[in-house]
Length: 358
Ligand code: GAL
Image (tube, rainbow, N blue to C red; front, top):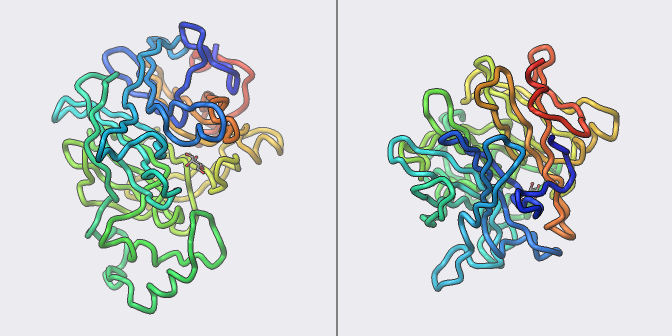
């Protein structure tokens, strides 16, 4: 049974510690990667690394240890105390490697770094070898802007943008078409993120860019370790975080949250016929009472798992963050059901995979 929001013991009885996670299905086994949190507010930063668990049935999870550990050696970009969030792992058929992407904030810089980082391994559980961090698509213009908007900022525009002192939250004065031009040379910002592999084997990095104001969807190179240099801006100025993508009946559905830090908010569902867009926002996919809809059952999305071998079966994976005592953050999984062609979520105190058989 899945018990959303309850402590979820692993096969040794220790609560699963894999927050902001994602699942790789490989060789008949599910591999769950997530942030290993420690107690207190310190737990909002990385002190251990990414934990990995394995399961054959999605309910009973074996502790497979730390897939990518923080590294305090000289020159390391992932020392204890940096921020490492939302790891996602995919398998690359071209190289045979398992490729992990995550959100990295260098130590001591708050959330201003806005970088993503990549690590690889020969086996699903790793350990993973850190490769590099980057700001995606340096020197590349987005595909879906007009030719005349493919130009760096003028000195006046740059000064104006600087004066706004943007953080990562929505304000009415947010200039929705300046930030990507500012970041063209050095690379686009990348905070909350996910990966998605399409039916044709193409892999995409979906990340909150432009001071969180706009999501970018960026194709990965054949070895999945760098961007290929093709990307679009999605819903400029709409401030989507916590992206999670699924494909159903040939359409792409994006679950994401509003930008309210660790606090939950009404989830957003968006749809597109092509991953390159155009994307259309449909509204809140959480169906319940007012409070449940306002805080999405007290959760922010992290991943959507298509259940192999079952028709129309997807699991919404989310986090109930507890920033004052990070280790107490809860995993919340709910089945996705389809209503009038839309994937939606309803509350269940407990449920099992049998819900997909009816
Ligand atoms: C949340 C996000 C977390 C983390 C946090 C920092 O919105 O889901 O992954 O980045 O913000 O405040």
